[in-house]
Length: 413
Image 1 (cartoon, rainbow, N blue to C red):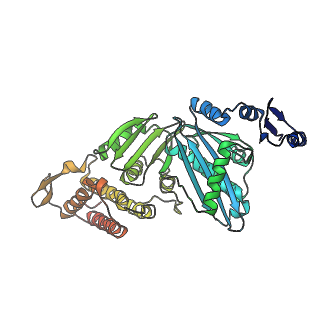
Image 2 (cartoon, rainbow, N blue to C red):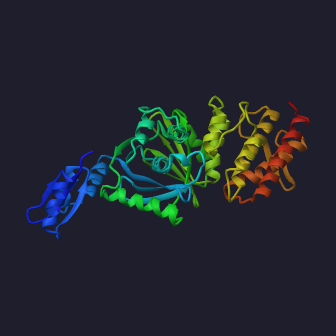
Image 3 (cartoon, rainbow, N blue to C red):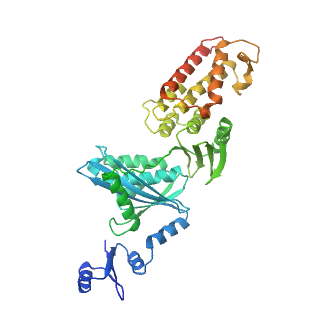
């Protein structure tokens, strides 16, 4: 690839041959110069124009979110890193950086960092509901692997292709290759971020969780269901989707090209979104959905019970574990419905008294009454519950015990 050497002088000059440029500079050493990978960049430099700001503004005007990404590697510390500058369509800028040391990826050196950078940029767009992003990068494999132009065979390539697929159908990615270390303003910024992460441990993580679900035929029903199950959450529209907010929690549902994005923060609303599919769309590949939601593989093909899903969720949540119980509460609700042969709300089957809950049909069944009392106590305050891991495990086990009692009781099935 040819270079363009721009020299600021009385008449301004652009050279494409370094020897000619150097000979000219040797005559008058006070002249300033820079090298660029394109003629347009060189001309903008001589005209004191911010070429990169102009390119960015054009991308944003076309509705793109934009990200600049770079990776780094240092053999002496056996680590790789990345830096990302992300710009939303409204012009707001964010910076992200991180580092890794996966033994399988270390032979790929800085390419491993390049991969993490691009995946961070795409995930950022995904979490924010942006439908298209243009990513500026300096390693050709990032676009070639993603588009299938290159066959990914190395561990880092296989990993990249698998992770990139998580966003197909919800985010359209356009790759723009730039030459590394060529005075590109943003390329130098992300290179610095990567170096700071690598050598100084300065990490700027991307926060947020999410998963995609094929199709969007369920979108309206899902929004109504979550609104019903979390009535205290505020609802707003954003980028063609809906955002639920409750305190610091946030959950957004975006119908996109061929799939729906479900994104937000780790909390009760996020767990509720998965509960919707488990209760209403068992026709979907449920185990794969659970994997996407919680971010790790499930080594089981058979259907999982709500109790098993609750225990899987314990490995996902790290602060407040209370959201995990929703799947166990779903099991109580299902058991009561089956015992009473009803498809309606179980709340319509019980009446609250001073001593607890009784069946409205006049019959007495302590197993059902105890189960509903426990369900009501946990479910009505679900959004605001805060449990540590041990407390959550106790709730899961209690729910399991109550369901087993129902199945062996008067209304056994």
